[in-house]
Length: 338
Image (cartoon, rainbow, N blue to C red):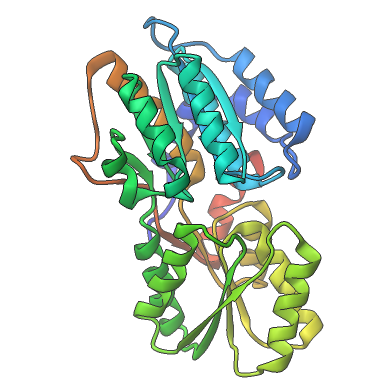
């Protein structure tokens, strides 16, 4: 596991700048006006590092409201946009057809570049094709690595979800676990299915998928609690998003279970849980990096026709984070960049 030394902290400090970090600390877990005001204030304080034209880039994600993961992605993108003199537009919708309409709207605005997630790729295919036909460069991010090249995107930035799942399976095996629950909180999300499938490939024990309604946390807790009460052989619960880890911990406590709670993604609460032993490990895909690099790579393409990846995804994860690394990352999670 890599150590986070002076060089790493210096690089992050250059990328974000001290004034921007202070503003980001005010971002709330609900997204909302406070988080938006903080992001605008951060952008206003920054200065472009280049004198290239003020191109307009649009990012359209499948995020629902109040998802801290996407706050981090958006923050990374906005800070890269300040540096690159980009007019950055962000929109999101967790309904795939609505997300596709947002992509269409960006095409109609004749933006200079589009960043889009493909959690439900079939619903986005026509909209992405329309952007490509209009001559707008597209980069996919976070989800949809398998479809990105086929749809005509320049490259994909994110983690390979199957590889990430395999990393979890290997870690659970290393920890001696025998039966795991994989909690899917968004039905139809291909990346989530790939994570659980990858877990099954490398885990020596058995895996059972548990589908929950991710928009209703009380129901999520009840479903996990009921499963743990009915099956005492479950010794590991894997959630697919940081906000669900805390809910799984509560379900475990209510059920009187000894199962270890592990999760995909990282935030301040997950880092604290790793540090105090409430959580076993987390899989970090570095969402700040996904947003930042997506804007940066679009700028490089517009400025210099550069394309990274060589036809393959640019990977930002997975990285297994345990108690040993949690302390070093705490300051970054608190300011909203990890």
